[in-house]
Image (cartoon, rainbow, N blue to C red; front, side, top):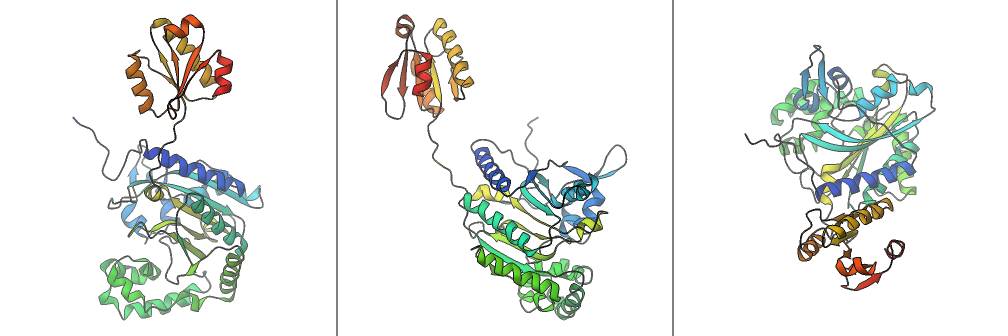
Length: 410
């Protein structure tokens, strides 16, 4: 029987894994400067956590979540996103009682049963940040600035779109106006949006169906219904982003696909990804901690799609690096083993051919491994008590008298 990956799941093997590593390292380097600390979250939770936080009427819960019953009869879900798990951990460990504000980051796999396509797998990877305990629009601006700095460090071209979707005070009036408008266009909406109309009309604004998108263009704007607090928060955010030199566009139709968002929402998009253009997105969710049994703690965050960003990174020409030890004969091989160990102990990437092939085959292998230097240990070197060091970039070869000299030269 031939086994392959399940549809919608990919192996991340070299050189693609090197892109993954570059994204993860860049992300970690940037977020740590901003004071974020890593949290490592489980990949499955009680299904009810996501039903309550993400929302029962969202596509994630209705169509995409992997749910199963474990041997104890519990209803379990593979996590479709990271925020709900982070909030659960924040509440469970009583972090709100220990810190005035908390900054966490995470990197890991998420799972959604979607139609596989470029940049959208059923197992995909996200790097995310969550901030708990800060309600100021300055915190929103800082998180958005951090997101832009990460993408810039990866040389990703993007546009930033922001919006405010209000709060529990002002959203009911908007919801009423939106239902009234959409009801008059109901026959033009797709089946999904027709069912969303009464339960969660804001989700219609997020529909990707082209006909629905045309209908939505004439819909009332949520920013026209914001209460004073939400309006002031959004206006202040725009001022701060301008002060921080973060270019943005106000898109009044951004609502995000999750029910827990309040006030600020934002999306970073790349024009080089086609339909799946969003590479990083997030917003504020001031009520979620309270709704999941914690205190009245404001919060915000974002998640970055690692799979999509990998599609945007160019295949870089690899720089030659490291050392390959070429040996001739058993005595030279034993000497080479000791030398490779010494070089690795000193932090150098070093390789040796354990098959003890011909000099020609060993040099071919060294070139294939793209090493910069070859150390030759043959009969002449053994008899004379020295090493021959050859640079594969320049072809220059030189005599090295000792291990100490070799290390200093490298």
